[in-house]
Image (tube, rainbow over all chains, first blue to last red; front, side):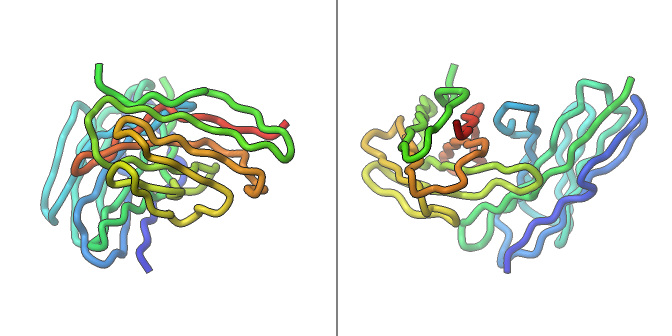
Length: 109
Length: 110
């Protein structure tokens, strides 16, 4: 069964304390892995697409990486405005998109 | 600006009532989707449409209905048959990938 699991469920960081969020997946054929940011009461905002193992994408303090079994979202020197829920989604070989439950990130000043 | 507009932002349903959630996009995307988001769960697909006048059931279609009469519009009706409708509903659209989302409608029961 196709599955996407994100960990941890919640992460509390001090401002400037770098860390990583994990997205592990078991799917029948990978046609893309997507990271989104979601603020409370808002829709998900697209961040990155990764297609193949070894690929990396960066945007400001965020860097996404991909292996054959998982993806990491690295957050370098986070600020309070980085606080949000980060969602991972995988598009399978059957052209279905499966979302993880998300990681809630809290960054304290 | 191009984007996806969902309305209303908040909606209340009475017992036995059908309610309709609006989704409009001006991104010229062919595909549109409806998801339901509950606390602690991933987004679950209700219905999707890849072309005008055609749509398919997703994983949790029971108690919901949709129409796709125009490329720009994909309204979702939550019928009285949906016994647990309280949730955050998200509409999305895509050309190829990724999907882009509206800002959601929060539906509650009166």
